[in-house]
Image (cartoon, rainbow, N blue to C red):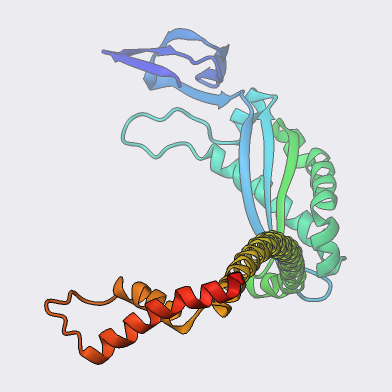
Length: 339
């Protein structure tokens, strides 16, 4: 931006690197160019500063399609001033003193370019339907506006060069846009739902596979447990059978030992009995030939060992006579036997 220092009766101008200054003094060009520095008298001088850098002009307007639909067009135009002297004579870029209205050159350029863009865009969109405008409107409008603005005679004579035109958006009304977006949104929602269902189906299938694996593992564990129980039962049964067999063998051995012992004891008892019987037989054979008195005496002798103690013994005459008779009779009998 240019800097103007004011002194009494004279001022000093210091230009900027992007501003082309044109100094007119009494209608004659005294100074012009970029980055100028000079003194001038405000009373008879006019200063105009035209920007020589690239300018950006955003524009927004509405148009009607062939099927009577309203669309909004958003564009951006890049331009520059290639003939600052001509621009300063056609548009107001004057440097005003404090307290005066600012120059309106930029607003004039914006109005001219905006009206040109809107005019050519309306003509182009009027030949297309809404669907075509939304599908190919951006590229078509960019070409149309670029060619039309660069070929415009007024811009060329004014010294304005169009560097480029960018069409940013061609959009219908909000309700129409929502209506157009609904099928796509429903399709996207359907695809999202399908993806969710497929993901759930995959999750269910995985859960089913996991459940089947767990069930198979449980069945395998149950079969192994059953085999283990059967094996333990078989082992216990075998142990019981072995124990029973061992007990049977032990019982048989004990029975056989007892039978052998009983047989030996019975044989011993039989032998003892036979010996006792033989002794008794021999004794009876001896006793058979004895006299009654002898037998009585022997009986008394045997009984005397088992009788209780006798304090007093009374012998009657009859008992004594009988005993004496026996004693005296035995020798006679013996003598008779000897004869």
